[in-house]
Image 1: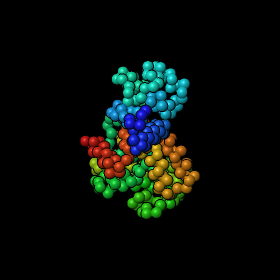
Image 2: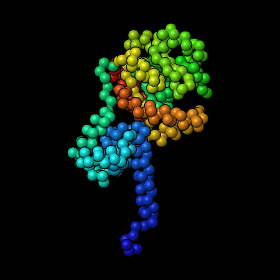
Image 3: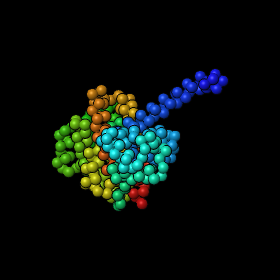
Amino acid sequence: MSESVRPPEVDRVAASRKAVAARRARASLKRDLSTRVVTPQEVLRRATADAQSAAGTLRVPEFLTALPAIGEGKRDRILAELQISPVKRLGGLGSRQRDALSAWLERRSPDPRPRPGRSSLIVLAGPTAVGKGTVAAYIRDNHPDVLLSISATTRAPREGEIDGRHYFFVDDAEFDRMIADGDLLEWATVHGTHRYGTPRGPIDRALAQGRSVLLEIDMQGAFQVRESEPRATLVFLLPPSWDELVNRLVGRGTESEEERTRRLRTARTELAAQGEFDFRIVNEDVAEAAEQVVDLMQASAR
């Protein structure tokens, strides 16, 4: 290439930075797929909407091997079955190939579908540090008509937490009594250490009065509530990305490094269960996520 047509140095630097940013975005997206922060169906939708996005420029083989339990051998068999070239990118698939991949994804792991006859009892759950408490607090402060259930717990209060507002802090003996007397809608031992439970009385009274009720609880508790109250609406709160979930946990500064490692390991298991929930909401902006939860309450009340 002659000097007269060689791109200026500033253009080459800008192009290099853009390429690095694109690779990092695709790497982050693959982490999100492997940890189930984002569903493969959602990634395919993003690729279809914007072929130049991180999803759109992701090669199909990389997309498939980012999915849990898919190695190179299985990947190659899937590509052959779907008649998709290994050089294809998600955003460059033809309509037939896109439909075939979409159908395969749905057979492998169907998107959740809301059950009929849901009540205005909303259960909000999700992995550690996703911001469940922050979203619930926003709803409490901005929607006083919604009853925010207060859990009982055997753990000690964190700085700034108030008994009777954030939790009912009780000792093990009192928690045992509540279990024995049937005073808890659900209860569980979380992270192998402390117990949490939901007092039943206030919820029953609020529902009888036609009010909406929000339970912000852990994953074990959410499934217990579904067993005891089958019409409850289960909502799974997701982080924008796995990297953001890690940043939030580290930035919180309330756990030791060993505890953070254990919680992130638990988070991977919790993310794998999101398909059992009625709805999924991404907590990128607290106010927006909270309003989406409230919209679900209002839709259930109609």
